[in-house]
Image (cartoon, rainbow, N blue to C red):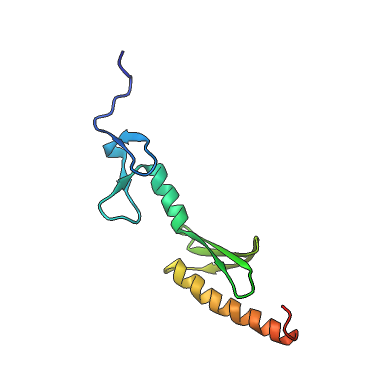
Length: 116
Protein backbone atom coordinates (compact mmCIF):
# COMPACT_ATOMS: atom_id res chain seq x y z
CA UNK A 1 0.00 0.00 0.00
CA UNK A 2 1.18 3.47 -0.73
CA UNK A 3 0.08 6.70 0.81
CA UNK A 4 -1.49 9.29 -1.43
CA UNK A 5 0.75 11.82 0.29
CA UNK A 6 4.42 10.99 0.52
CA UNK A 7 7.03 13.29 1.95
CA UNK A 8 10.30 14.00 0.17
CA UNK A 9 12.20 14.27 3.44
CA UNK A 10 10.11 13.27 6.48
CA UNK A 11 11.55 14.99 9.55
CA UNK A 12 10.38 14.90 13.18
CA UNK A 13 9.96 18.26 14.87
CA UNK A 14 12.50 18.37 17.72
CA UNK A 15 9.96 20.06 20.01
CA UNK A 16 6.77 18.01 19.54
CA UNK A 17 7.91 14.99 17.54
CA UNK A 18 5.33 15.37 14.76
CA UNK A 19 6.77 14.23 11.44
CA UNK A 20 6.55 16.86 8.70
CA UNK A 21 8.37 17.38 5.45
CA UNK A 22 11.69 19.12 5.95
CA UNK A 23 10.59 21.80 3.48
CA UNK A 24 7.66 22.64 5.80
CA UNK A 25 9.90 23.30 8.80
CA UNK A 26 10.52 26.93 9.84
CA UNK A 27 13.26 28.65 11.81
CA UNK A 28 13.01 28.37 15.58
CA UNK A 29 12.23 31.84 16.99
CA UNK A 30 14.86 31.60 19.73
CA UNK A 31 17.54 29.19 18.56
CA UNK A 32 19.84 29.98 15.67
CA UNK A 33 20.19 27.17 13.12
CA UNK A 34 17.27 25.15 14.51
CA UNK A 35 14.05 24.23 12.74
CA UNK A 36 10.61 23.37 14.15
CA UNK A 37 7.19 22.70 12.66
CA UNK A 38 4.89 25.67 12.06
CA UNK A 39 2.65 24.78 15.02
CA UNK A 40 5.58 24.79 17.43
CA UNK A 41 6.90 28.01 15.90
CA UNK A 42 3.55 29.71 16.55
CA UNK A 43 3.41 28.31 20.11
CA UNK A 44 6.95 29.52 20.86
CA UNK A 45 6.11 32.98 19.48
CA UNK A 46 3.02 33.11 21.71
CA UNK A 47 5.10 32.11 24.76
CA UNK A 48 7.67 34.78 23.92
CA UNK A 49 4.95 37.42 23.71
CA UNK A 50 3.53 37.03 27.20
CA UNK A 51 4.65 37.02 30.79
CA UNK A 52 3.76 37.34 34.44
CA UNK A 53 5.23 39.66 37.07
CA UNK A 54 4.36 39.86 40.77
CA UNK A 55 4.43 43.40 42.11
CA UNK A 56 5.58 44.53 45.55
CA UNK A 57 2.08 43.95 46.95
CA UNK A 58 1.52 40.46 45.59
CA UNK A 59 -0.60 41.50 42.60
CA UNK A 60 -0.20 39.29 39.54
CA UNK A 61 0.58 41.47 36.55
CA UNK A 62 0.13 39.47 33.35
CA UNK A 63 1.04 40.89 29.97
CA UNK A 64 0.61 39.90 26.36
CA UNK A 65 2.21 41.53 23.35
CA UNK A 66 0.10 41.67 20.19
CA UNK A 67 2.74 42.16 17.48
CA UNK A 68 0.30 42.76 14.61
CA UNK A 69 -1.21 45.73 16.47
CA UNK A 70 2.03 46.70 18.28
CA UNK A 71 0.07 46.70 21.55
CA UNK A 72 0.90 45.47 25.02
CA UNK A 73 -2.15 44.39 27.04
CA UNK A 74 -1.60 44.46 30.79
CA UNK A 75 -3.84 42.76 33.36
CA UNK A 76 -3.73 42.95 37.16
CA UNK A 77 -5.17 39.91 38.92
CA UNK A 78 -7.01 38.88 35.75
CA UNK A 79 -8.51 42.30 34.95
CA UNK A 80 -7.35 44.35 31.95
CA UNK A 81 -5.92 47.59 33.32
CA UNK A 82 -3.91 49.06 30.44
CA UNK A 83 -3.16 48.81 26.75
CA UNK A 84 0.13 50.36 25.71
CA UNK A 85 1.51 51.09 22.28
CA UNK A 86 4.68 49.02 22.07
CA UNK A 87 6.91 49.49 19.06
CA UNK A 88 10.07 48.11 20.65
CA UNK A 89 10.84 45.21 22.99
CA UNK A 90 7.74 44.28 25.03
CA UNK A 91 9.88 43.23 28.00
CA UNK A 92 11.43 46.70 28.16
CA UNK A 93 7.95 48.22 28.00
CA UNK A 94 6.62 46.04 30.83
CA UNK A 95 9.66 47.00 32.95
CA UNK A 96 8.85 50.69 32.38
CA UNK A 97 5.20 50.03 33.21
CA UNK A 98 6.15 48.21 36.42
CA UNK A 99 8.22 51.20 37.59
CA UNK A 100 5.14 53.42 37.20
CA UNK A 101 2.81 50.76 38.67
CA UNK A 102 4.96 50.21 41.77
CA UNK A 103 5.28 53.96 42.40
CA UNK A 104 1.50 54.33 42.11
CA UNK A 105 0.96 51.43 44.52
CA UNK A 106 3.40 52.97 47.02
CA UNK A 107 1.67 56.35 46.74
CA UNK A 108 -1.76 54.85 47.38
CA UNK A 109 -0.39 52.89 50.33
CA UNK A 110 1.19 55.97 51.90
CA UNK A 111 -1.97 58.05 51.40
CA UNK A 112 -4.05 55.36 53.09
CA UNK A 113 -1.72 55.20 56.06
CA UNK A 114 0.05 52.00 55.05
CA UNK A 115 -2.87 49.86 53.82
CA UNK A 116 -3.16 49.33 50.07
